[in-house]
Length: 76
Length: 259
Picture 1 (cartoon, rainbow over the protein chains, first blue to last red):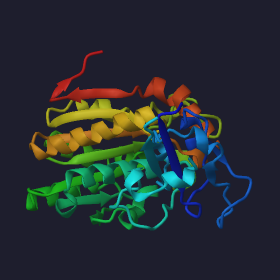
Picture 2 (cartoon, each protein chain N blue to C red):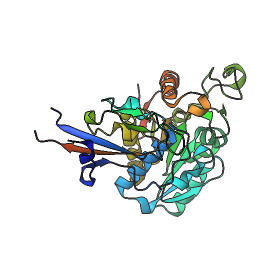
Picture 3 (cartoon, rainbow over the protein chains, first blue to last red):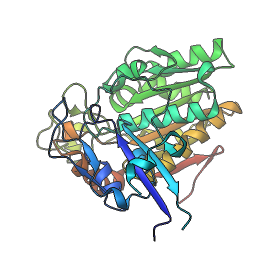
Picture 4 (cartoon, each protein chain N blue to C red):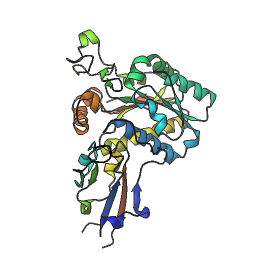
């Protein structure tokens, strides 16, 4: 049913795991990982990638600018 | 469709501004400085004025702003960024000049430079990041600390009878005739980020048209100084900072906004 699908790419090594992107996501797609990156932070990742709509809300509040957003429109 | 099929260069809708260096920000996790750096660089990138823009870094947490902003930068003595900006703008009137200052820098040691630069109507932009505390040096009380707010030099909260009242510097400079545009924004939610970006665009527009000083305040968090998690610090900011520092435009097109 979804007409728009999105995906985010997190620069895992630069993510500081602040979690500001988590409440910013309207679809509750993002969670903080149980694993840690090289700095010891629980980095952000897409927990429910099928729900992402590519709105870029997470990316524009990210203080470290580590999120890139991709978006496609589906015809059917 | 698997999400990996979406991640292709032609589907890219948002990425980190190319005017930021690859160096990771030195700020604490969740600090608003990073978001504000990103927004300013996005606006400079969209206007295509990287070659003719000079930024001035302050003393404070953002003293290393020149490490992250990939353009011409200067670093001023503590609080003296508006004085340096005045010199740069008068020597090179065709360049876009902005200063980036925190509340300890702008509202404490640099009050004189700030007020006089604004009063002269220097054609510069002043970005003012207000987190109510001296973040870099360990969370001491700043002129902008709220009444009753604890800090490392007032652990029982700011007592206004002894320590005086907080300074609303944006309202103060908005009274000066040289200031053309004064606004207060925040960057903790997507909606506020979009509004803040519009304010930054407006400030560069004012400087392009040589109308006078633009003063853009950002109410920001200091989760290390406030001893809160980043998300809790943003909630605390909404509950406590915004009633005292209300968001919105204070002066537009040289006229005070009446509420």
